[in-house]
Length: 233
Image 1: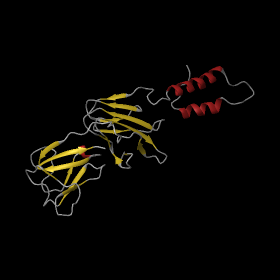
Image 2 (image 1 turned 60 degrees about the horizontal axis):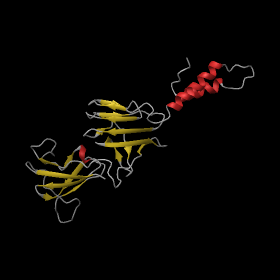
Image 3 (image 1 turned 45 degrees about the vertical axis):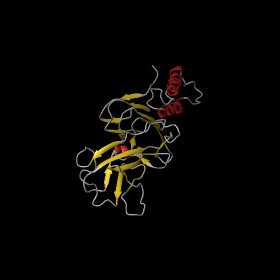
Image 4 (image 1 turned 135 degrees about the vertical axis):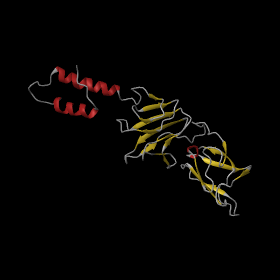
């Protein structure tokens, strides 16, 4: 049986050590067979999806086991990955929620912003750059959306789960990340920037999952009925 090389570096070391001029016919059939079979195996593995995409349906933590990973059913609690020979991964999130990346792992979007999730119902392709940072290689901001728009929702402060906390000025939701927020309190639109007339207004960085309301007394009031519409580039 030919040698099974753990990686292409091990194959290269074997070839350098054994397929060399020696003048005494020491390159035997088995040695050459090992080298050629190693080359054949790594050629077979060269396409990104040679092993077929792994499918994850778990609410637990996931470590990517293949270069292409499909998430379906349950949304994982976290995702992380290690370097691979391709310096590339494709993540297909078919779940209804964003998948958070583990720890300090992030990637940079085409907007130059930092992303720490794989958004719901989205395909994200990431590449490792020469500076060892991961960058997004596909563009979700085309004229034909590659992901559905996020659902508008309504909340009542002090009653509805995930509503903002009374007497605070921020509201954090995973759905806000990578989307602009159009906010209504009651049936009134809240200004999306400071108009200068003292009216309440909200602010948010696109990549952030937190909006901040200003000029709004002591913050959210118990019983405030708030609704949002999300605009996703």
